[in-house]
Image (spheres, rainbow, N blue to C red):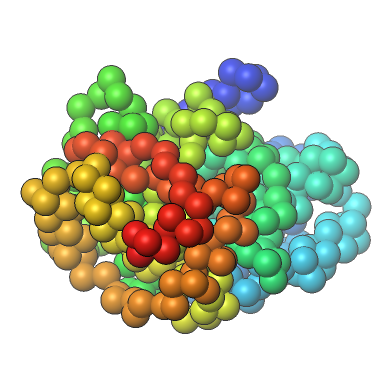
Length: 357
């Protein structure tokens, strides 16, 4: 078992992150020991519930099942979750538990942040993307027709329990989607933690075969490395006022691709990887990085054989990016690579971006 801790000094929040690979059937007893006599409801992704309900054995009358897909992270389902929680008469001392990928964690966390102005919340991520990114740090949200994650709150969980054995049944495309967020950390590692040596890009290169074969011990170490980087950022900047923006590397363009395809055609990780390619090309055009580093980054991405995404109409993409939640004063914000494993914020007007596209 590996244990990490998040300690946010500004609001005196702290919580543990446990990384295990024991029997999944142990999760119910671990959670019930954690919450004691308090009540709880569990929000499952539909796929995870079908695969693991017999092992997890949570009472059916305490379970809310959310259909799979980013399109389900909407205000209608958010309202349904609140109605379900209200019907169970949960108090502020009780718990909402999310078991699933990023979609489940995001909407369950947002419901937890608003129910009675805040109820206790536990994350049990079952996808690689949720393990390394969305389950830690307190970003919760739902999507609207205007864009992704535009309605939400910063709301930290009370406990995060990661079991790497969930990754064994994750379909290949979703596994690769998670790897999109993993490689992102490799490209921003020194910006996350300047005092520590940058090790993740080398780890990804040297262990790519074990990663792709989902070797459990390799995956546990990889998850720990990524989460440690996220913790180092979130502890310094919980609400994305400065440093935390580096975690958006690849996301400005990636979110626009998700939006233009209505969240149906490509996974989040696939779009992030496309956003990384865009950022690398943009940085190279601006002479922020040299050809050698651009090729090195490209070689790391090639090792994982990510899905190729076609080009879209630049005017439509740029128009969508102007509504990104990070945009300000008609400027589109990008985190762009500048040195090995480092990024820096740059802003462009729509017209400036059109000339660089």
